[in-house]
Length: 381
Length: 254
Image (cartoon, rainbow over all chains, first blue to last red; front, side, top):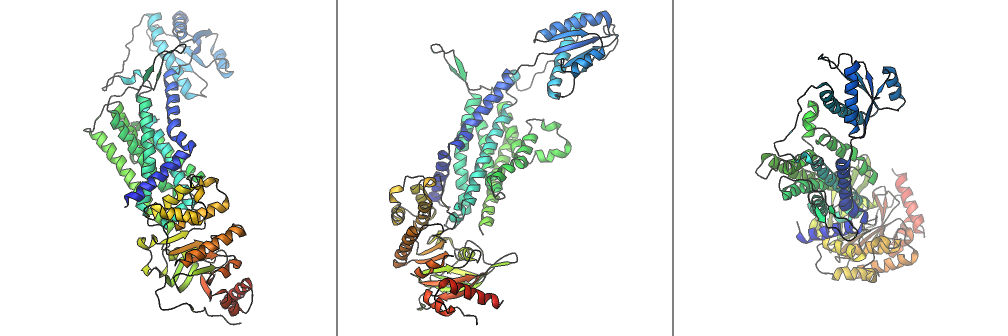
């Protein structure tokens, strides 16, 4: 291992990235724009107004409930309108003039146990589920108000404070880990592929440089940009700077200001380790690619499953038994878990979960670096 | 017609050869890319490795530089058995594919390869760039160079460490006659200063510029000697014709 050669390699890789403005943008600008976009959607997104049709088979109490529902829904810009019968409601939903119908059954308000049915067209499950939930919430208030029955309400608090005031907080660990991992993988994979196809790797192998120096040089070069990227991303996500009003410009804040319970440096360490793992993964997988398109084709194989299973979209505990072993062999799972521990639970280095996550991420990075080094040899000999 | 035995090295003076191949064989599955090649190459001479595309020239060079592992036999460079990292620092290798980083400048490319070879200081880099007439273009981004300039840079990157043994894999492909003549005068200068040069080519009109030719066909050395000797051996005044005849002989005896 020669320090001078490593330094030359590091300098070369960083020069290459710096000269390629698109790569710089992909590494440094895109993650910030994307987290900004996610933040905007999650924080500013409105629950859509629910315009419900009501089919009333419950007589007078039904009319009272419908009136109360209309008031409740009107608070978020919606309404509840009574229609003649079920057929009219179905026709309206079918032709798109209404999205949801509520059937109030006979016996409502008489003390009997009744079931209120809600009908939607079923084309957009997520949106309709949120509408149904809105109807349910409105229904509780409406029944309370109209019929004078008081129902208990459920309030959820968490062990680690209530950071959920910010709807972005649960998404942040996943978004940060994923963006860092994904972009570093693409850039390293393609960059190393160019090294192979451009004939420079062949040429390098004709010098006294060792395979270990090549992999380490790449890891240093891309790792350098990854640390800048992760640093910027964390500053942007966790920090918030108030810019005072200036002349005609109103005051505004820069940064997402996601609340953080733990140490930002520890969060930084978690993401950087994940990104270094992406560097060696990119080098390793580029062995099996002949063109840049093929590096992209690996994304559905190696990136998407990690995205699906790392606990971002579906809680890990809710995944089927058979998928559990796969969940726990994927580095992104540990990155997301580690970030969650730090950002939400305020875990520090003394926490076993953090120790485990850091160990696994380091191990994965080293493992792929080692096999990447062996594949370089196979390619050249 | 009879098969001509390869001509013995006329320059063998008992001194140590710069390069030695000893029964080199390289197979890729059923294909014998290099099929039992043995020779000694004396220092300070230019050797032409001539043969059609796919005859095994590049594989032979990769075996000699230790970049490919032989199926049988072995290669020695500067009296050291390959592969050897120490000797790699004394070999210049200009690959067929450019092997240049397009986003780096001319100077950055040359300095990077110099560092990879373990060279200290910029003397070798400056000399190499001056040799290929790119000394005034050090700050030009390599990707913006013309095809000929790129080949020149590629040559310079193989020379930054002033190697005593130089392999040039089809260095003049796609180069105009003027630049080709320039290249050959560089090669001659390098050989004059004691370097051993192996140039592979499938262009026969370059052959006469070499001190000695090795004709390669289907992984075998089918003839060796100076241009005149090979012509005489094949009984023709034309090298191209000589190559075809010698090749046909090999085919006939298979």
